[in-house]
Structures are given as structure tokens and as C-alpha cells.
Image 1: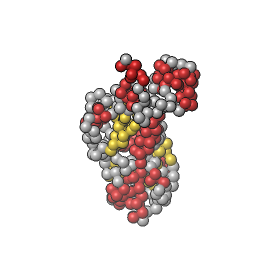
Image 2 (image 1 turned 60 degrees about the vertical axis):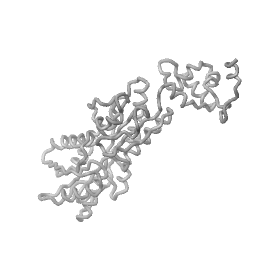
Image 3 (image 1 turned 90 degrees about the horizontal axis):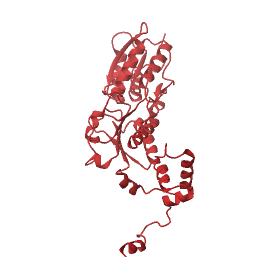
Image 4 (image 1 turned 180 degrees about the horizontal axis):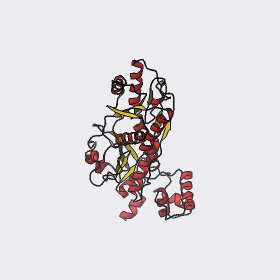
Amino acid sequence: MAHRAQQDRPPAAGADTNRPTSRDVARAAGVSQATVSLVLGDKWRGRVSERTAAVVRDAARELGYRPNLAARSLRLGRTRTALLVVPALTNDFFARVYTGAAAVAAQHGFGVVLYPSPEGVGPARDPFASARAALDGVIASSMAAQALTAIRGTDLPLVMLDSDPADTGAAAHVNLDIADGMRQVADHLLALGHRRIVHLASAVASWTFDVRARALRTATDGVTGTQLRTVTAPLDVDSGREAAVRALTAPGTRPTAIVCDDDILAAGACKAARRLGLRIPEDVTVTGFDDLALATAVEPELTTVRLPAEQVGERGMTALLDLLDDRRPEEGSLPVELVVRGSSAPPPA
């Protein structure tokens, strides 16, 4: 009788009795509820045909079916939340990485929490009482795996973006072909005739900037008569300006090109040139890296390397979802592209 009374109990206040269920989707698609769960849980590959999966998705869409994410989370033991850790929120590259990750997450009923490391690329504190209780996984952009020890615990999957692929602390890596980007910059300048080059390098110690330095050095070493000098600066416009002034006024013949580790430093280099009465690109060429919004805000617009930031975020979130479902994440670096604009030209005669 108790069981019968429970069956006859009216729905709770506020319950949506007209909301379609997985049983409704199964009936409309002519399949079992188990098949619906596989397809809508994105676990159908190798178990259900593509045609059947398409039929199930179409039926769910036509019925307006929305899965009960709270119940599914309890069943799977998941929070359906990922943490994206970035060095800073002031760089729009990381904002675009977040946009890409959040778009993929939303397609799978996940949320993404964006967290800037208080110490930049240094150790990041756990923003929760316990990350393991609050998260399904961690994605980190342009940081070192050891900087995330406090966050990831011992069992949270970690996906590293734009970071050292040899770092075994991560379960998966999503990288850009940073070295090729700097090679493209060097080839462009050498083809224009530049031989006195200054590398305005980031003072931040990280894998991505180390790769840029090595690639530029390798590309210029084999070219007769080329002089490459390096100056470093913190990642802000004023520091970039001060370092560029020192480079342009140092004893000896003035450099004809300044290769900057990112567009923020390049903006500083452009300010330095103007303060010294130099024209860009007639007197000195300036190149950036990242293709931030800043690259087209300065005049002349920056020659720079475009990084597919949103695609990095998409791949990162996809890799985390693959790890959670025991699939092997996609491998291989994402290509980058040199964008030639008005800040580069042949050196002065």
C-alpha cells in the first residue's frame, strides 16, 4: 500500500509535468532509452550507428527535450564544472581561450569557471575549499603544471594549453606551433633585408616565451651578417617602451627591426620610436606576436603572428571531455599565421 500511495502522490509544486522525458525521445525515435542515453550523453560512438544517433538527436530537438543535468551529475559523480586557469585577465588572448572552451562546454552541459592565478604564472591557490569536490577537471593556459598542485589535487585530470609538452604533470596538452610563428617573423624580416635585429623578450619565465627566443635565434644564426641582441621587459606597455628606448639608443649602429614577444611589448616599442623621433616602419620595423585587438589599434597597425585562441580553448575543453570519458584526446599543434601589416618594411638605406 505504501508503494501504491507513493505512485498516486501528485507531482511536487513547480514540477513541469509536460516536460518531455528520455522515454518520450526513445518512443519518437523508435529506439530504447539506453540508446537515447548513449547518444545524448555523447557516448554512442562504436555502439550506435551515426544514422541512429542523428535520429535520436532530431527527435530530442523536435520535442524540446532537455536532460536533467542535476540527476545525471549525481549518477555519474560529476559536478559538470571545469576550471580554466590563466595568468591574467588583462590579455584578450585568454578571454578568447575562455570563449572557445565555454562554447564547447555548453554543448555538453558543462560550465567553465575562469580563474586568474594571483601570481601570474607562479603557484595558483585553490579558489575552493576543495577543488576535487567542486570540479571535474582543470584546464590551464600558458602555465607550468607544477604551479597548479594546490588546485588539481591528486586525481583531477589536467589539460595544459600553450605549455611544455614534456611536462608529465598533465594528462593532455594542446599547443600552438609557436616556433613556426617566430620562424615566420624571422623569415619575413630577413627577406626584407634586416640584419640588425633586437629581440624585445618577455621577462616572464615560461615555456612559450622560451620557444620564441630559441626559434628566433635559430632562424637568424645561419644568416651571414645578422646581429641579434636581446633585451627583456615585464609584460606591460611602459616596460616595453623603456626597454625599447634603451635598445634604440645603445652605443653602436641602431637596430633596424625590433621583434617583440607579444603585441603589448610591441605597442611599447612603437611609443619608444615615436618619442625618439623615429618613423615606423621607415626608420625601424616593429613586429608583435598574438594578434591581440591592440595590434590594429596602434598606427601603423602591427605585423604580428595570429594565434587561434578560441580554437585553443575549444580543443582544451574537448580534450578534458575526452579524458573524462576515457577517450584519447586529439594530438598535434595548431598552426599559426603571420599577418603582415604596416609596421614592417625594408630597412632604411
